[in-house]
Length: 421
Length: 103
Image (cartoon, rainbow over all chains, first blue to last red; front, side):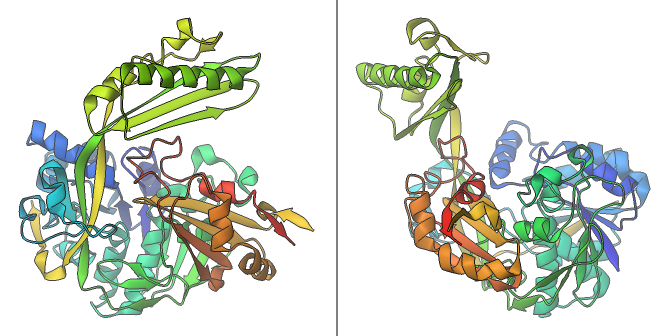
């Protein structure tokens, strides 16, 4: 049996969680998922400004903190610059062997395939000039290959999140590329833990009022067996709760057809598994079934769409909600007077005795959005009485990065492993 | 008798592009039949008529007594494009639990 913890569900998740996982109980592998889709475009921008950047820069510092614990670490912290990330880990932890998985970045290969939008069928050429980042989702086998080099740390760029957890199982148990049921088991385990504490009591609706000690919530651990059965648990003494409820909620999280959960390594059938409670804070999962891996890999392409801004004001009694709605109407009329045109605009009013007014707009052009940001806060002086809560001042216009979901043939993505030190 | 869905089930929702998916899970195995009968794709779409503009497709997970609803055109084009407070669709799960069903 091997123990694989997941200590990061996105870049910005608890910085303490990975440390608690390696220090507070037995653990063999630590998986860290840093990359949301939006993260790749942010990192690409950082790399453009400084070629040494483009990765999750808190990861090398974390490695420095946990390096002496002997836990192998697999992290997609490499972002769009995995080699720079690995070099920085090496610089801070010279005694560690660091391997890098390369080959996911396809930014300079966008003219090789049409990259038809999976939702709309349009060709990528319609937004080609605005593309910010482009990466293929790679699977677990290149990570397992990296582990076979004897690496203490494996740094990847874009890969299927669940592959970070499947990879050590492939490496330790010798699972093959067509062991569909075993691979599906590993992907199911990875899917359950890839959002960190979301399977140990965080963001959990089932009996949420009684979930204990969320301030010390334990991040998840997979106890994986060679035969594909596994237990989801957490360190003894940590907060939160692993229950049938918490695991079921995560099993359906961000899933389409549960009979066909597509990953680069296998199509997993989430309706095939049986979940049973196996003592306190332990859920055993058995029976995973998988179908042969897809012929195509998914690409994550981000592009500049336009601009948006959102602002809030708070109104106190009397008639708070009425005043908020009146305030919004004034802003909208001002926009008409100024001739500002938006692609979309949304007004929300929350609350009753006290009310929060939230307004947001978006447009392809920056101009009208920038102009709009100057129209809301003046309501404090020139609108309905008692507007407050403008502490952050004028809303800011933000760039909108959108996603272009597309497929490319598996053989178009050639991964390779590089070892440092 | 009418009861709120939240008295027999829990839920979690999330986003993928412009899709929101809502997983609804019966607390007790014996209530799964009730879920199947009462919580249909049509009712989910109707419950969020102002937020889900596209089609809703329901999937069954009898192994965990759950349904999964995939809702298209629910985020104004996607999480980064959405202008709503809930740009990632996190509130749909809890929101659906207010649905009144026949017990």
